[in-house]
Image (spheres, rainbow over the protein chains, first blue to last red):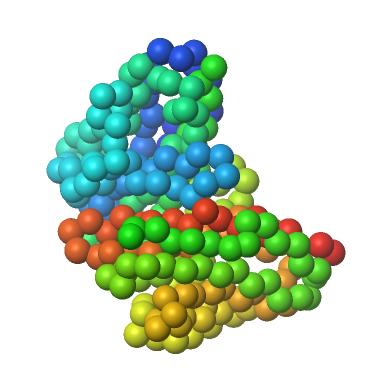
Length: 114
Length: 113
């Protein structure tokens, strides 16, 4: 089966600009996650979708971050305006059931804010 | 406490040696403990996982040892190979409606030929 697709792979923006990341999960996977991985740290969950509904967005900085999953398939994560501390790799993952076991991660988008 | 503490931060092992990475947790509600392997430029990939009712799980050269009373678990890589050089993350999930992974801080493993 095809993996989790993410684009772009890399993005460099200036602070206060906006940026969007796209994720296409594995076909049929109902659960989709966005994680933020700062250099030297483990990934941290930003938001979890079950189909097109939000299950957990408790750690999403909602004043600047937004995410949507229209039609329960693709998802977009947006940052507006970006700050220097948003520099990180943004990982998308999907799983086929609600247990969360057996996540499949994409390769991520590396964001650099200058 | 929703934290998973991981050590060491980095590890250098000779080819053929045993690599050992340790993790500890506080929250006894965690119900699933996976280990992920991450190569540069790639997302984490599930390596092996264990539930708290099992004390050990082995898959090939990779073994998880789980000590429920001590709230600790570890990854052992036997006969370490240069191709094992990567960052390893332990993680835990709480179950329930949200099964988010709570990751440790990672261990950078270098296996020298």
